[in-house]
Length: 119
Image: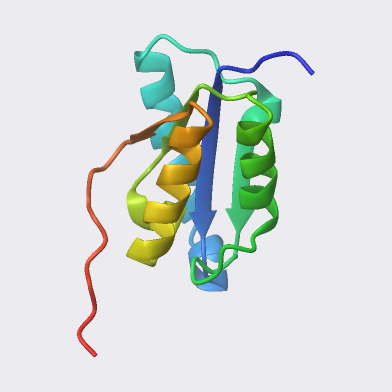
């Protein structure tokens, strides 16, 4: 497999979000930023979980992304915001640690941190 330096991850969780086209707006914003940063995004490096909840780490494209990262095929990963990676802060931290260990720099387009919910 050829080394692909740049990848994109996007996720919408509900059918309503999918229907309203929010995945398209995520993709447009991330692709614009990738171009602004002077990178080229290969088609094979789009990891999109459409209509998949962020409440679980078991998502088809997230698992594929993690495999590529572990194989050393990604150096820079673009994501709209931390909550698109995962809704739960603990899962965000786990994934960020995993990506870091694989040498992947994660760039969030929007820097909105996850908030803790009161129980």
